[in-house]
Amino acid sequence: MTKNKNNTDFKYDVTIVGAGPAGLGVGIILEKLGINYIILEKNSIGSSFRKWPKETRFISPSFTGNFFKMVDLNAITPDTSPAFYLRTEHPTGTDYAKYLVSISEFFELNVKTRVNVKKIEKNEKSFIIKTNNKDYKSKFVIWAAGEYQYPKKESFKGYEHCTHYSQVKSFSDLEGEKKVVIGSYESGFDAAVNLSELGKKVLLLDSSDYLHLVNSDSSYSLSPFTRDRIENAMNDIHYHKKTSVKEVKFENNQYTIKTSNNKTFNSKTKPINCTGFATSLTLVEDLFDFDEGYPLLNDFDESQKTKNLFLVGPQVKHGSALFCFIYKYRQRFAIVAEKIAKTKKIGQEKLKDVIQEYKDYNFYLEDLSCCDDECVC
Image (tube, rainbow, N blue to C red):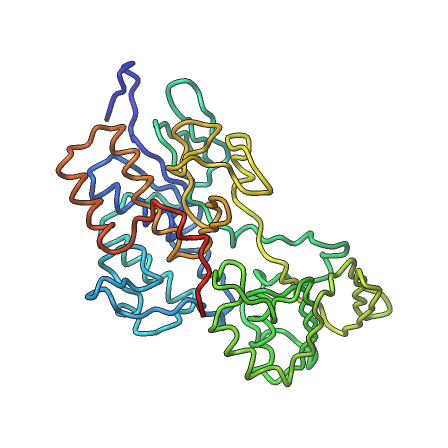
């Protein structure tokens, strides 16, 4: 039990919402710093990854380079490696969930599962985190809920006639020799490639032109892993760029897809909706200000609107720097933890040692000017 200067009791100094890589990653630093915290998870540790289609794999490669201070891109701590633990370069969602569980057990993290956060209220002294079974009270909140559990289904009229990517347990379960995939980027191309590998013909409707868009920032351009797979599958994929879907209808025993450029496509089976995922921040949107859909944060990833509310994970954005992959947003864990530790007046020697470890292994990105550079070749 801790107390603030106004003698208000807190069972926990910090409440972290979400036990995915973001929540566990920042929780590990708080654990090392000796800060009193709890992680609340509405399902189980890594549950979103277990919901991935069976065939889907990480697009970022895992490789054990920790010994040379080049940490595995999918690791959430400087001293672990999914490649070493899982013995694979591109883990499945189920694989990665096993890694997250093992991390939680090794660091003995304080995780409470089956706790569904309904609402967060802020008063002058603290946050009240209202859940399905009890209220939690803390001085700080770190929002670390992910995106996969919030599919963006309503991107066009008639979306209910489609199967969203997040609803696919295995692409081998989908019937029909010809399939329509709506939306591209990573999930759309992943769906198309996996269907191709099952011997199916695919009509891929891309509202942009991701196949030919090249950017050195993987937040805005297809990964090399995806491009390699596409190259081997293009004979089975009929690709339509800049073809945005307006409506899907089900009539006369078939699905009719109408596009903004006045094209019409028909399918005997349900189209697959790959228009992406929304954000968990809708649950706490009153505690953030937004610009073009992204929350406004200060230099410590704290809400500009609500003091002591921090954000970690794929929704973090500063300028054009989007931290939407694990190897990006993990570089901000220590920024958040350090800010909280200084407020809690954690011993300087301990704080210095922990933060230095993260700096040494490139888990501490403070200067964001580097994020504006393009690779020279």
